[in-house]
Image (cartoon, rainbow, N blue to C red; front, side, top):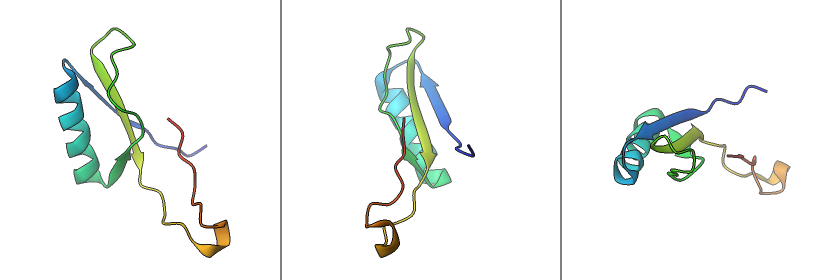
Length: 67
């Protein structure tokens, strides 16, 4: 699998969300997960490369991105 995932870790939910937004904006990514503190080591969020636009050949669904 050639999937690339980028991770942001920050001390607060607001900082994690802001850094995720900047990462996506500057690198042409899209969020894959929202910030969570479930791991107990700060706030974490993930981003992946943007998917292609849906077209008639794939039934209009486009690729599915898991998180």
